[in-house]
Image (cartoon, helix red, strand yellow):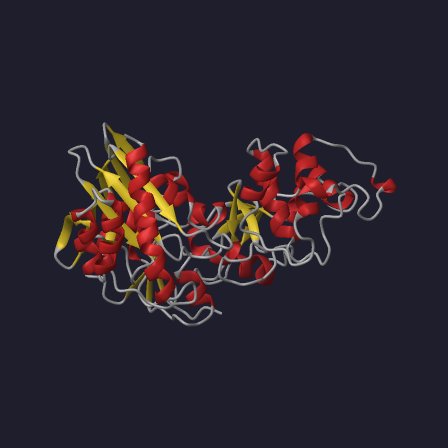
Length: 262
Length: 169
């Protein structure tokens, strides 16, 4: 059973930011899909917990071509968005988990697990998303790539991106909805023609495929180049050996789908 | 804090990080939601929270003050089965029964949202639920029958008789 612990239930984003402070000593529960099993099993015994359930931050807003996803927006709210974000969200777990799991939780997932988590990171990297988060140095907005590099001690508030001119999401099939995605590639062609590529399942967080982007006009070369951008690993879902062979294929398929959408 | 469970207001005293599943089973004595994997992976604990199917093992009760919860106990009893429960009986959709409560609640939400008897759509809606007995065919048949509004005379129901192997998801 749960030990006696300080549990705070903020009722506004400002209050959540204030309770979070610099993040030290605070365990944040957004949807709870990752944290709650750890608490129930006794692997995590937080001294202070913040439940974000009533903090707001759950809006999915469209303003022109700009999409803003609140940190507490459930992934199920994203499934109809344009590729790569929508199809990526739809590929996560099953409907019940998607009703519960959140955008903010997904961006903070991935550290220390035995399988790649945070599927959305790849799709949001591909569309060039900006993350607004709070922490020791106040509230800042930065590219997702920068956020992922320093996300410990940050409270995600929302994520914003411009809908790309075209997008694609390709993933290795999951044997069952309960599996995390072993490897996935997201691609986007931005309004100015730039092509961006990112992967999930190729490291402890989503990773941008810069080398592949540089030769995106040649899908075969891009597939091979992508291997320079990742540090592949063995885990319960797939071996590094397998991922090394699958990543170039997924990059080629993602670029082919972008091309089809012209 | 309070929960509204199957239409009844219930006081809850468990600590706020206790799962809804433990509160239902241990504090409130409602045993249809089952403790399976306790990590959101099996669907045996699925209940409706404000009409939506949710894994009770993943919800800290402290975030649910005032929420409306529906469990199998809120569907119907032996003498007044919900049509969905009747369809499960008629189609022999339960064997050991451990997964059944979660499947019933997920199927209830699916049908309430206008779900049809399309087997692929049913499979998608129930995709988070593990059944180790039936192979799912009879479950999908039962949900399809309930979605169509089929009516049953359970006094004539016999094992397996009404299941069609070609309609699996």
